[in-house]
Length: 468
Length: 101
Image (cartoon, rainbow over all chains, first blue to last red; front, top):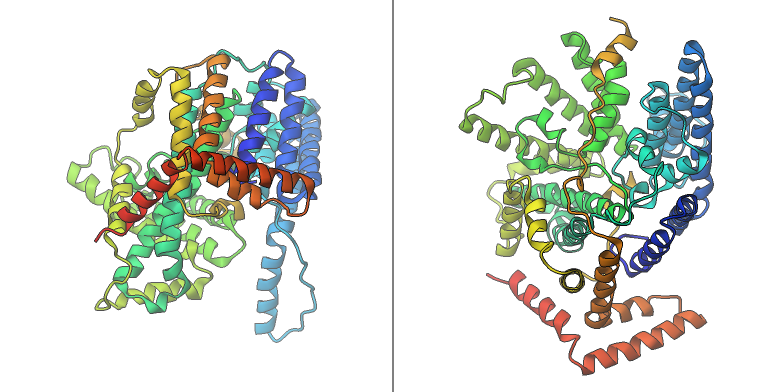
């Protein structure tokens, strides 16, 4: 059930009405939201509701044990819990990938290989709800949560439908405390939610769809047929497509959660205005980068010593790349980001932007964006050979452009310029919107929603991050 | 430094920035009013999209056929009132804008 569909609209209206009717019956409200979340997930594949339930109960049980145990046992229990979570994720997501790599290696060595592949369906959102589960057991271990959550709260936390299939990755220590008290029916951040939902719908239905069909897919499908200018346009187009697609999902998720009375963290902060890669990862998929920092990079040793820091950065980014997909081009994507982070730490230091002049910052922003776009080629390509073939096409400098229509160029320029809008633009818009009475807000929101769907293409493609 | 000491030193657990933190609160009654009006407006202006959705439901089922018939009649009524022009005009304007140059 995709967000920008009539099915989801009907589903949400019903859940919204029922949830607020149960506002003063807190536990029944949580039961309703949990049931609705399982219904939402069942629309993708009902069989994986069992996996979702198993993950929730298993991690809840581990949390109980960790909380009641002494120090040595706690460490072993959290290790066991994380291992179970990673085994489940690894089995569904990486079994065939590693088997394929293993078989290829054996083939090169001239050895026989009879290990069968499995016809596995990747459960939607498994990367996200696995990270939620790990966040829970580790936060219990680190005493970031005062006490284990009741099972009902845990079931809702893992399955909550706005965040279930594509994030943001909401920490247990951030979300579970919100479930301890009834949601306040006098404190619904509705106007901001409408702006987020409408903005997200526009980015997904109109912008991302246009860029995908007009520029990105034709070029990435057959890069050999295009010259350097079209290849560059496609790369910029993809950078904006994936940003609009992914940030649209999280904006809508945040808005939907806000209408139900819950608060999600920011996930994107104008990433293409980043100066350097350290800054980029503070702005892109913030919930993932902060999760990797707190649950992987720091346990590996964090910033202790230069060479250890570089090693930890590389490991974190390589695994972060593989988290996105079971393919070597994702590992390469992560590896390039890790390498560039190491270079930045080594040669520029942690605070180089603080003393930089405006020209240096501008140059830094430009170079960062170009390098990020280079890494997107590996991310989008089918495989490594495809990526290298794409990059090789930049030598076709004399080939005329066939895709640089004025509308496309204007759209890309406007989207890039929007990265430099004031950071409080949402708050500014909201100050105007809140002056309208609720009926007017509703009428404008309804009309804008129809306008968005009128100018978008028929049929909605799945969000890119669903595949992760 | 032991690994656990590193973790204790490094983890600040910065409270994540909540997107709606600084937003204006609204009471449930006014939120319900605005969502209700939005739904009505979408029904009035989006009858063609509603018809497409209804026609995409499984054919040959009672509920699918009923909804499809109702959506057709609703779309015919909205066409009669020229309320479908809103979406059509926007689509044409957007197409013209895309074809500039």
